Length: 344
Image: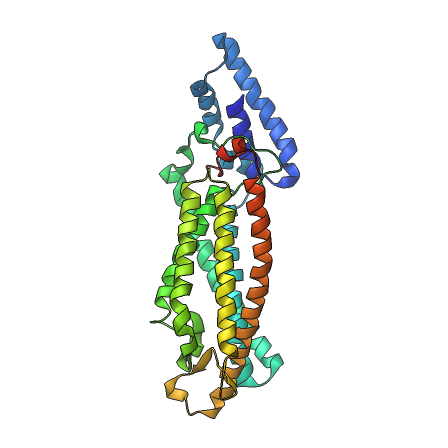
């Protein structure tokens, strides 16, 4: 039965990989016996509504999969994958870059001792990570305890499950698409606020550092690139049947980002009176303070290294996204109508 296969596929997605085959075999046998028993009572094959009722009584795929996971006491298995995703995004892609390229260089410039600066930066990073992780955990713990009262797990329809996919194919989940859209939206808002609140990007260093005029011609293209990423995420979520679009959209975004970073690096290389143009300059209040000159130099060097690393990473991404796009284009047309996401 196609509906049963789609249900088992959705359950498999949320199971630990090491247990998927055994659990799915057991669950398939149990559900099939229920279907056979019901068909024996009626003397005919079940229609879609009757089969859907059996699956709905069994529970949503993510809820069924959670029964086979180890018990968690603060955040249940249903929310745990989303919790881990958000935690990784905040800790690895926000806190770490800020401390690596801003706080770390500032500490080095202030102390002039690498060991002391490293210890101080790691201590600050630990405190920031602890607060961020605690806040995220608290939010998800509240959601965990309110979703049962709101009946979230009951609001699902087995007939909305995606079509059965080949084992070789890995489709992006709906949760991933929603999170990507949310982070893209927050990224655009953050970029729009940065000119008015430099502390959002410089942190405490905004008291004596500011962006140099070299960024002025690049600000609008950077915001436009972020908006394009937001639209790409929205279209991916709204049109999951367009299998070619995520890879194509990501490829276009990556190429433009690659060109933009190249232009920024080239702009810094353009010298004025033999002096390379900086990315960060001293604020007016400390412009005549020699003690901050070294700090600005260290931050500029760190930013240039970061831009060079980003350019190398994006160059590799272009190759990967090109290969993904070509792979999607070459798929048989019948495969392109499959639904791309899992419904929780």
